[in-house]
Amino acid sequence: MRLYPIIIACFTDLIFGDPQWFRLHPVRLIGKLIKKLETLCKNKKLDGIFVVITVVGVTFLVTFLITGLAHKMNFYIWVIISSFLIYTSISIKDLKVESMEVYGALQEKNLLKARKNLSMIVGRDTENLTEKEIIRATVETIAENIVDGIISPLFYAFIGGAPLALAYKAVNTLDSMIGYKAEKYKNLGWFAAEVDDIVNFIPAVISGILIPVASFLSGKNFINSLKTVLRDGIKNPVSGIPESAIAGALQVQLGGLNFYNSSPVMKPFLGEDKNLLEEKHIKESIKIVYVCAFLTLILGCALWNIAKYSMK
Image (cartoon, rainbow, N blue to C red; front, side, top):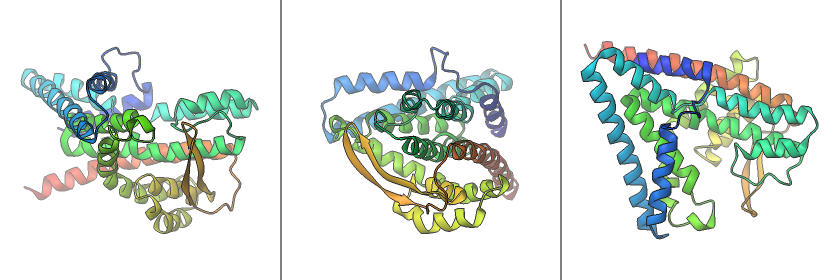
């Protein structure tokens, strides 16, 4: 029964993308709760723990009660509501749409527009990025979002349905909003960043297997993708795994100097620059994303059924 909402959610996202028009969008409500708690708390480390526990706990409990009530009412109502909630936690089509907006601006040779479009999907400063740096940032965020927007929410949906998928999304939203990249969130956001790394670790490891396979199915370099994961993934055990897998598949080099709120951050280099980064690598990365999404769904369903029948 748990598989139905997950499958429906994936195909709904592929067709329609994220329902940002929906005023009661769960992620939007989670964001409002975070903002409210931020105004009530002082910038202390204990406050950071309180905010994470409160936001994740409320998200899980409310989702659990909603889906539980729906299940008592009617099976089909439960499927519809669970499917919608899981659907809001994943991001496959939107990742393509937003990345292709950067690609389109680069095709037009409009760097100002490309930087502006890129700023909508990355946390780094984009005002002074060169064309190559824009491409690198886009490919890196595509790779990272294979975990954040696809594998992780589906992983938790397979384990605990909509409540756990939305609880994961709450952690991910906390990290995006108050993660301690910014100085003002150094104390308030530290725990959110730590928890985000923890909950993404296993999905990131899974991505280190699925992305090379998806690369092979997409006509890219499977061996180099896997080799690069094994060599460079350890440099950053969460985002470094999918990024190194993509870097190896495309035979490019990712990582390097980024700026966040004008502060320089040196990221480890991943992969080898056998190929210079070009616009086409954005489209090739997106192709890998789609194949990886299908592999995640197929693998999850297969493992679910194996576990189900082994318990009989």
